[in-house]
Image (cartoon, rainbow, N blue to C red):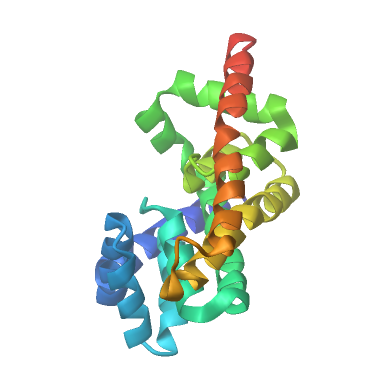
Length: 225
């Protein structure tokens, strides 16, 4: 059973890498997202017609192994597909992406994570996740500056229960995704005097401000490890 899960995780990683490397459309979209070129990405999605939704999903799945600002896709989705459609796409797509990072972290990613971050640092991260429980996982999703995929890698490596990882991912990701999607939907008629823009910026700033107390909590956890 363990070997089957390992091979499945490796197969997932290989499939995602091939998706990025061999599909020109995904490769191009990933390049736009990595550069933060939302205009080019929006043009590509619109040019793809109905296939733009599939391309957006592929881009979020590619994020399992390919780092780029997740907010770029959410912003463009809001602009291109409107609020209801973009919310449905982004919530489901990022949830699938998060599950992929969890699977890799649990079954195949630990040796790679130890090589990239060091066994001691990974051990501390795991201890923080284990000791902090669901509040740490939830906070990591709520704070904009915390990278999306590493949370899943560490949670998988720390063997966080799948149900806990799943619900904290959905609940924690929803506010930030909603803010960026709604902001993206306003870009076509953007105005600095639009009160909606400021209503969206305020919670974003508050979530970003949460990075400071989260950092202090993590520091305390490290000291007690």
